Figure 1 (spheres, rainbow, N blue to C red):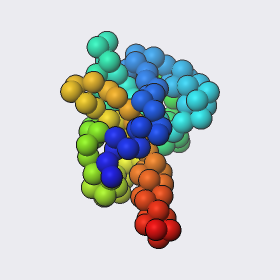
Figure 2: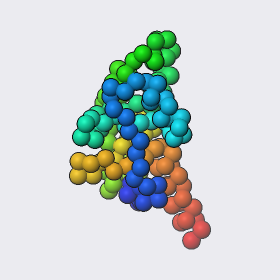
Figure 3: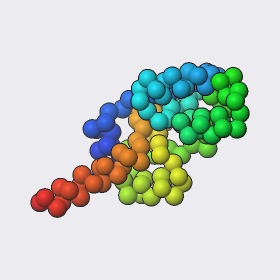
Figure 4: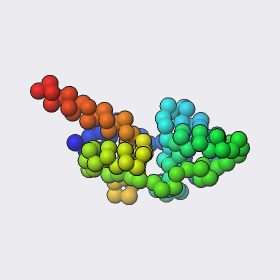
Length: 134
């Protein structure tokens, strides 16, 4: 089982934000779409970072002026990406070891989806349930 199987069920929708946009806009998008992270993209749509609820909360704890900042100021710049053909077990291991919950998926240089650690765990659980039922 691979990432493509998750994206086939989940769909390719990825919510993105530009680095110059304000943190308040990021919070609005996170709440509006009931998601935990946004992929930060450049003009060409290429991922250059990720901003999560956790990033925002940690910055707010350090700095009450968080709303005056731009996304680029607090986003995670060291972004880890996956591919549609990546195996779920290795993706789950990477996400756990690197302590990340959201993995943007790239294919041929294009952002094609995002998976969460919850997506990976659910897919593995469903697979094991199917094996047990069989």
